[in-house]
Length: 475
Image (tube, rainbow, N blue to C red):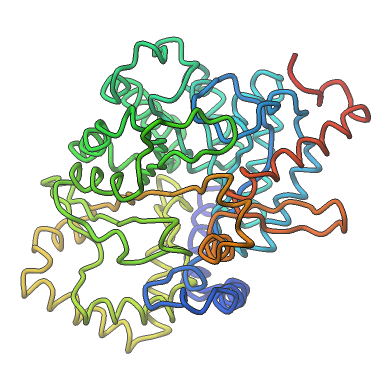
């Protein structure tokens, strides 16, 4: 048995080395690049080079929370949970649009909440497993309270479903956590014990299952919590154990859509980014690379030394390095950077994919090594980071903003070329069936928030009388 497992491990490693870049993924990326508006086909564009887009499911819409900035329509809790067959059709359609190794957000309302309360936990496990077996990388989107209260459900999702990533939304807009009532939360610092509880939960899941498991942190930013954002960033970065678990920090300036109670003085993406940089402690170029349209996203990847907890922007900004990075995107962009595809014994297969890609392009590999050497000698990269990387004591964390559009902006897209360009270049799209012609379409989330959710809910309510009782909405 042990020999069989070891043989399978080396087979996977060998396949990762031999075929580091999937031809189907390359084909889809080329088509995506060609579809981008010409002005967005820039050297630092990752859409069409590294990703087509991040997908999402339109799954169970129920959520027990009543947040002040929910983008779903008011009738969300009345909508029946899609059947397992319908969810599989959604996953298949997302897989066709995205190709292998792409990210798929398992979302709708709070799906963990919905499936737990309807006593259909095994069905959510099967949905996650189906996504994994389809070649996608599912990330469960949740407020997390259900899984914090019932960790055995999360362990089942990890062990049987193959879940390796979970995004937890934590901020002051949330109403529904018994231990943190919204009227008593005066700053984001009041929620740090909650963040610590999820850190401990993830560490326990890793220890109990022996499997890799990572978290992402989502936070809506309003005038009420903008003053706390730098403090939130510092909380994650002051402890390398936290940033090793929480690999993505996403801050989302509020958008006037759904049932949001919009701020009297709404924050701007520029202000949010300044507060993020204040929390990091150094100014960071949020546009070193862009995904889709620059008005939609800002972000940076940081390299953290676990020895000293010092951090460094992963991408140096000098002209030669930026030019080399562009060439890496063109030739190796289709390479999957997934780090959660192994287990506690084998580790990630990423190193084998990178080695295989370098073997395929030895000239590029040699230039990369020379460039890194120069950056080390010149002091642009401190030697401590080379030592940390060489000893496996370094990791990355991605920090950024995702700027959703107001519903009124999306509705006016035919008359606003910038908004239309943002929709055309969107890197956050989910597969939705067009009932008029039966075809699946990749719909931007901003378009979902503006009208498509409501249209989809009407369709599901119309079908409700034909559903078995177990699929009907919560009372």
